[in-house]
Image 1 (cartoon, rainbow, N blue to C red):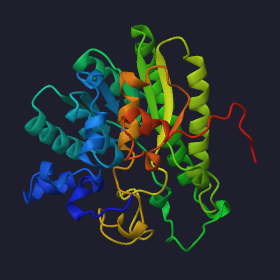
Image 2: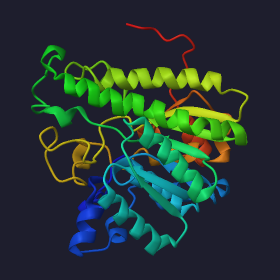
Image 3: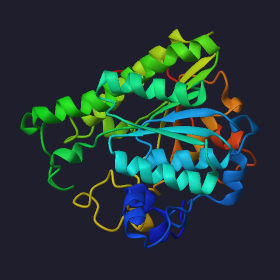
Length: 325
């Protein structure tokens, strides 16, 4: 994974599109440059992605934006959601300028609110007539509630109840709400893919992380249940994760200091778009029928002769009956 990155590569991951559009200092298109080799990106651009409709929650920045950009490069259509209307408008304007009209729809809303989630799905159907892929990317960070820096472990009994409600409502219940709204349409059309973004297994049981990590563990268990319930319908349900902390604004300065886009140097964080290859590949017909798997972005093999081979190396071993504790 060793490479050199300049700050502009990951400005978009920090939500810089809004800043750039407001200041006019550069265009948003100039602010994004993938950390992946062009050969890897070309392998991802599967013919089945052309005209594929992908709904991405939390799509105005971070993982959501990076995934959207590569899908657009492959000819897909995207529906992006976020809580902030200004950020969504800036992203939509940028996409229209670079990819043309009719490629992107946006809808502002909060995934922790069930009516907003229903509205997101309806907006996708109204814009493009179908939903082929749902990427559950929207999430809240435990750092939103005062991490007190990387050197201070905050025990569960000092963690505010507000953190419990916000993190579970967004990171777990939000996935339930959007997926429950989208799944019937996928089942009816006999095709669909639900991909939810998770975290590393070690982060699920890390001291000082009593809500975010266990919430992601619950999300993964729920996804395994869905994968079994959806078998035979043409709809797959899978998990993707970066494999470690990645250089986006999700990781606050008080935890890992430095500019967003520069913190992947010297191994402090993974590149901000480390998750892109496995998620994009899971959107293609090459993975139809692949369900209940866990794909780790950092394990994508850049030297593999094909995306299919690189993807296989991303997959964690499948355990039919997980051991608890």
